[in-house]
Image (cartoon, rainbow, N blue to C red):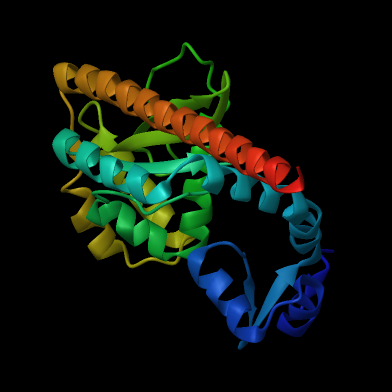
Length: 250
């Protein structure tokens, strides 16, 4: 039987207050189960969060130092607007580093559900496991197409630019109807607005699909260059600071 924790137990374990627990529920960082009027949380998930907390904090801090996220966000907005797709930058763990640009109505509805947001993050995380040479689009948990470009600094991928929220072929009406009912049930969403939003999902032709793939790679390379330039600048500033310290000692 699954060991469930109360909100108070989660607060004590994670060293956070009650408001933060509900904020984490709202943005999808925490999954909960409603038992009557009370939230319950799986002990295994909380213990996993505790184990990963140290390394995740270091990873996120390092990314913040390497990538100027405000600049990245602006470029991402322009790319998403020109390409007419949704776009987001994430870590290699699938966790978003910024806001989604040009988010579709359909995906906005999915992301409002905590479980829907977690499913999106899991889809983004799977993109990190794609072979470096594989630029094909893959299905997300909701049946839409996504692809990623690796942001590489010091020959290592440190983050991803992801584009998607579209179809590359007209969906089968029957299959789409079944999928929408499943999504609505799984993420506790109203089926009618979800179905209406699905009607506005873009279907890319082959030419547009290829263009977006090329543009995305160029954006990823640009982000990588920004990261490399910033890292080099920080190293130079540290060297200058070290020289100043040496001169003061002398």
